[in-house]
Image (cartoon, rainbow, N blue to C red; front, side, top):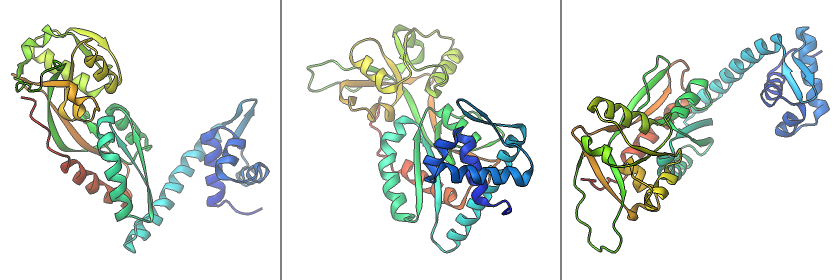
Length: 309
């Protein structure tokens, strides 16, 4: 019997994550009997049953769960070593996963991939989009290496670097037929209850920021509709169902920005802060460390937003 090796651990992790030998064999592009033999050899050497077989697939036993944690850590260390040695040859290798909120995803994905390909041709980049709260969660669980998030709450396991401050504004449907629009005037926060609002769910960073500022100002918001998608919120504003509270970049990222007018909120002015976030518990890979300044530069290179008042 061959001693335990990295290939066996990699195969074992794939089966555990997918919950199926057939799915893992498809992903790994090997025959299922060969995959089963590798896992069986691992069980024989360790003298433990690693999986419980059932009609729907497989599930980890207690011993399997313990080995899974060790295997993931071992494979991560091996990947880190390979990346470290590759970087020492001035040729970053490996893969980095970047998380972006939707408004930033629409603006940064193309330039990020373009710059990444030019600077790190031997490395791979994965981009995932999600709400800021989801991106923070993915970073803490290891699914994402580095991300951008709006107003992340401080946590012991996070390294947070503010990159960009934007004021919030009341977004309304522009009056049609006017060739020249008057410059939008600022709107005091205490007037906000006069406007029926279309807002995201409470998990959304913008919603939390708005409700916190409203509470501090002692006002009660008129929530007319609750919709999770920012593009859908903008569509509803354009259709006359209410108003929204967004940043200038959130409006500019929409294809319907020309149909909207933004009044900057004042007294006080709520500020949304875009931050670079990564785990403080897990040492960033060399590739992740090189990707962070690329992200930072791209954020700082974003075109200046037109004043919303």
